[in-house]
Image (cartoon, rainbow, N blue to C red):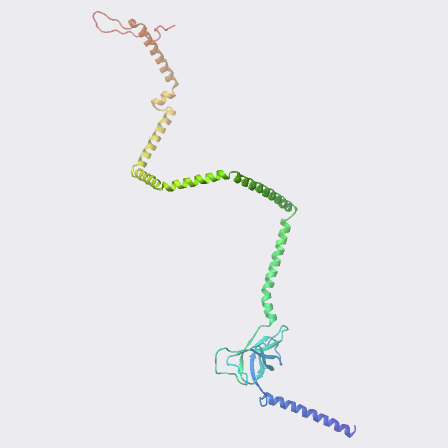
Length: 337
């Protein structure tokens, strides 16, 4: 290797070292806000949702800075410290929140400063740590909204499947034939209803004058009732007086006595019907009836004979020592021929 080539290599290496030192020094100075026009703020998160260095920081929709560094807090893997820089001159009120959010449909993450709207004289300065919050990403929000819909859809599909099975089992050929026949009957019924409606319309047209007279008579009756309202009230009052009189009288006692008498009469008639007592024997004893009939017949014959032959039974003398009456039995009484 020649001396010129060695000199070129050394010069190049020295240039790279100088360039690296310069770059590192500038960044170091900027990180310590010596020459930077930005201030450093921090936020501590449990999950940064894919936030990375270089992502934008927004305040009221405007870009005001970038995320500069992300690291674990004291080697605690459950805590992440996010360092971000914003432009100097922007005052962020105390109690404002640094929220990690999705800034576009592609899922790019960023920081959004939620400003405390309450009036305060305190503002964050460089090196302060803000309160933090993590907003669900667009996909998470969509999944959150779609998941219940998905479940409902699955349930609905299961229900529809059950309905289809039920329809298949119900609407068999026989059932379809019955439904077809039912629709035919419905059509006939509608035709009959239409015919009935036409008939009723014709009847109403033809009987229009009579219906008018009926309505006029009904109106006249109503008018008469209205004109005789006082008379109706008098009749109702009289009826009320009669009902009060009936209520004041022992009407129920009379009904009860009549009921008792009817019951006793029924008992007597039952006894007569059963042949009990004298009257019952007279009605039921055929032998007694025949003897009475025979006696009546004999008495009738005797009276006829006495009328025709009084001397046979009654005799007179000059000296009346008393009457002698001779009565013969029916067997000795001559019968009329």
